[in-house]
Amino acid sequence: MLMANTNVYLTLLLLLSVLKWVQSTPHSSTNYVQDACSVTRYRALCINTLAPFSSTAKTSPSKWARAGVSITIGETKKVTQYLMKVKNYRTMKGSYKIPLSDCIECLQDAIDQLHGSLGVLRKLNARNFYAQMGDITTWLSAVLTDHETCLDGFENPRGKQAKMVRNRVLRSSYFTSNALALVNKLATSGLDNTVA
Image (tube, rainbow, N blue to C red; front, side, top):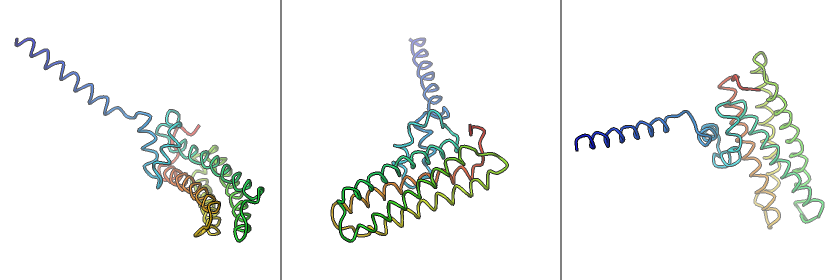
């Protein structure tokens, strides 16, 4: 009886130590994306869109920043294409025609700034790191300004189409905000060894 109790006790101890080890293991892929997105304003969006990068980005701030900017490029392109369809099919009438054209122009400029940012993120180096970070944060801030300028034309939107335009541009700005937060995290943590 004493031997059986000892075996049960040892088995429980072993299970508890294994459980403790599993919980204290550095990261699962879910933890990687949650850690990366902890600095962002729109965390759920960040986690949902960047989760596929967990296995490659892991704890690398530079890889998370690149992923954030890449996802933002794709989202901004989708919104721009949507706005161009709205313009080409002339579904937006009246006082929204000029703001729609301005919006398209702003987002095309934003795409250029995002591509510039991604290009620099792919060529980070220790000697120019802080200058590169300064350029990227300036460009991403300009992208946010482009979004705000676009949204100004659709403040208090009337009609379904105007509301849809506003919502899509607003969502695109959330991606940019998250990308900027990931870049700022990279800037404060410094260049890591896994930039390649």
